[in-house]
Structures are given as C-alpha cells and as structure tokens.
View 1 (cartoon, rainbow, N blue to C red):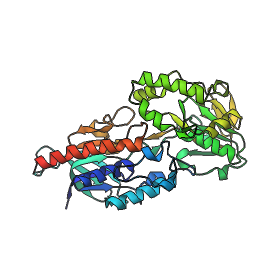
View 2 (view 1 turned 90 degrees about the vertical axis):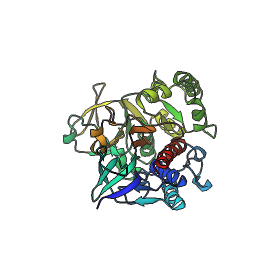
View 3 (view 1 turned 45 degrees about the vertical axis):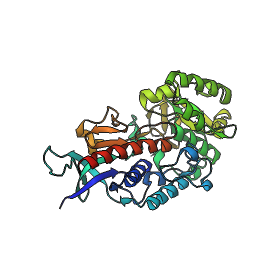
Amino acid sequence: MVEKLDVVVIGAGPAGLACAAEFRRVGIAATVLERGDAAGASWRGHYDGLRLNTSRWFSHLPGRRFPWRAGVFPGRDDVVRYLESYVAHHRLDVRFRTEVRRIDAVEPGGDPVGVRWTVRTADDVLRARHVIVASGLLRVPFVPDWPGRDRYAGTLMSAADYRSPAVFRGRDVLVVGAGCSGMEIAAQLAAGGAGQVRLAVRTPPNILLRSIAGLPGDAAAMLLIRLPAATADAHVARIRRLTIGDLTAHGLPAPEEGPFQRLVRTGDGPAVVDRAVLASIRAGRVQVVTAVTALDSTGAFLADGSHIPVDAVIAATGYRTGLVPLVGHLGVLDDCERPRSTSGEEAAPGLRFIGFRHQPGWFGALGAQTRRIAAVTHQEVASCL
C-alpha cells in the first residue's frame, strides 16, 4: 500500500531539520527521509579540525542555539552533536537509512486528496502534497577526469575522503583547489609533517579571514550582504588590503571579481580561513602552483608547462548535488545540476529546494527561509480543510 503524507523532507542535515522543525511548530506533520544512519551524515565524514566559517551566534537553527562550549566557531563534532540534539529537542520524525531514488509528479486529478508528488525510495513508494529537497550542495564529491588519471600510481583522493595529515607524513602532496577546504587541508598537511605541500590554483580565490582582531569576521559579512554586490566588494577589497595584504608574490593575487559579485554570478562562496593558513603560504610551507592539466604515473603536469612528482593528490575540487536522478527529468535544474529555485520558493507546485545557496551566516539564514516555507504551506493546507 502506498503511504500518503502531508510533507516529505529529503535530507536530515541543517536545512532539512530546520524545515521539519518549522513545520512542526505550525502544526504540520513532516517526515524527513535520510539516506545515512544519523542526522548530519555528511558532517560526520568531514576532516578533523573542520570548523564553521560563521560564529555560533549567527549559525543556529530555529528554536535552538549552539551551547557555549562549542566555542566561537563550532567544529565538526560540535555540529554533529548539535544536529542530534536538534532532532531530539523538536521530536522530529526522521527515517534513517532511507535513500530517495526519484521524485515524480502525480498526474492532475490522479489523486482525490490533492497529493502532487510520488517519492520513490529504495524500498517504498510514498505520496505527498509537499516535497522539500534539502539534500545539500555537498552531496557527491567531484574529482576531475584529468588525462592520465588512470595511470597515476600514487594516492588520488577527494577532499571528502581526507581525515587528517597523519598518513601523509614525509610524503609530497599536491592539493588541488583553493577553496576553504583546499587551503585548510594544505596548511594541515604542512603542519602535520608532510613533505613538500603544494596547492594548485586555477582561479585565484577571494580570501576572507574567519576572525579579525579577535572578532568573528562574519558579522561584517552579514552587514555587507545587504548592500549592492559591487559596493560590498569595494568594502571587502579595503578590508583585505588592511588585514591580509598582497599575496601576489606567493601565487594568490586578489581576483578582479570580488566575493559578493562572484557569489551572485556563480553561487560560489569565498575561501574563509585563519591567519595560520596564510602564514604557512607566506613561509613557503605551502607552495602555490598553477592548475593541474594532466597526470602521469609519477605526478602532475601544470598549466605553466612544468611537471611535479608527488606521492599523493587530494582533489578539493568541489561537489555535485546528485539531484539529476531525483529530479533531472522535471526541468527544475540549471546546467550545473543545481536547483533553479534555491531560496524556498516553489520550483513546481508543492516542490521546493532549500540549502542550495552559499551565503554569509548560512545556518542562520535557513531560519527565515524555513519559516516562510512553513507559513505558506500552512496557509495552503488550511485552505484545503
């Protein structure tokens, strides 16, 4: 028998749990489907030492704050404990080990109670009036298909599989990608006893400090995002000159396009790091090199024509959403396989996506989005009674 539900939320990460909590607050039953064994499954797999880029004051979900013991910038384990407590505190209905395979629209008039979507899992078929997809941007690690990749004899791994520098002691490592994870992993490796550590950069990143003069840097970002992107970037450029300085000699010139304009254009966020990461680059413990163009059995070819032998390559080259099998046939994704609607507005009647857009204070921003979704859905459900 097909189970019928009011609301199905896909994903028990921050976005999905926040949605479920807001639905519960307004009296709507929401069922969360999570492919992992526990809440925040993707967070559990992140590397040791990972911390939020935003302070705990701007990073809590609706109805529950981070405890003070999590520190200013909660770490991976703090986030996992917080999400576990969030499920218990709000008494959320979460079905673990339930992977959604496909979402299909119900034919108009095909259900007498207004059910609009069929959700197929590995074991069951569910029908729901509303479906909220909150499986996240960081679902499927992406490793480029470099020429010669199959011939490389060293260790080749995604940043998603990296945990700590311990296994790389004494080994020469090339980290590819200068986002938050790539830069932090490279600095960890250098501090943890790796041999020569190199960081391959294709596009110079917009670099922001996690804290400035002991104060969280996200407070300024939360104010700047209210300004036109070009105006905000002008302020960021001045802050960068004062707090970071010129890294051109170290291979990291300031990009022409600032972080807010890049965020609007591509949806990609800046590299938010601590001063220790920049110190490792300035001291030469992490050497910045040009982009990887190919691999061979011993190492990597770079865009400047050089070849470097390396024992391991760690690809911090981003993720894919993994949404194509679920909703690719519905015409709701862009060319990068991201949802066209990313702030909780309907992508199709009764179908919404949340948590698919980078922005300062991402955790906190979910609150406003989920409250809006719950309110609109509540009105619609009430009108059908």
